[in-house]
Length: 321
Image (cartoon, helix red, strand yellow):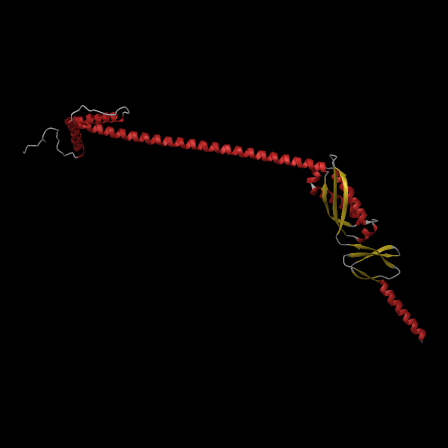
């Protein structure tokens, strides 16, 4: 009886060990390859998996998450024979665990060597200025080449980035001098353009001022001509009135012209710069008579009904009918 119990207990323990040996727990983000007597048969997905022990075993544990691989610094000769130092970084993820495990011996070393050689090829076909200014183009070309080469390995290259490009110190100093000269050239051009614009603005302002002055002189000339025209019209009208008065038999109208010339002549004597004292050998009664004639003429021109008087004579009276 004890022997039977011992055998049963042994079988139970053996079954438990068999079950435990066949259980495969796969972590999230990983895939395990399952081999049957050393030959690949299946891929264990994350979670609980059971395979018969002793017949099946885990071959490779493949990381399916996106991974980062640093590219160590290296010396590269550009197309124009300039020596530069550069390094980079590669982002990739495994899409097929079986291919990544069995199509390439060492996936990480293979990707590293592939990116390194293609980095030399891409940057070696470009000039120094292009390598410094066209990083996006370098990254795009590297990504296309490396991704196409790693497709049989079940790997997807998501990004290839060049981190740093270091030219030699003498080239850096030459570039600094070139940049300084270029900035000084642009500053000189801007100063010249500013001076040119200033001169143009000054010339435009002077031109506009001359135009405005010419327009002002033209307007003043028009106004002077209009004033002279009106003065001439008034003079003509006054002359016509005096002529009409003379033709009507009014003797006082003649005194108008005499008084006008008389006053004008006196004004010219007064405006003379050499005249200090002016003597007028004229009689006061003649001047009064002349002015009286002007007054009578004005009365006749304005009143129409005023009586005509001559200086030195009493006013005429119309006899009663």
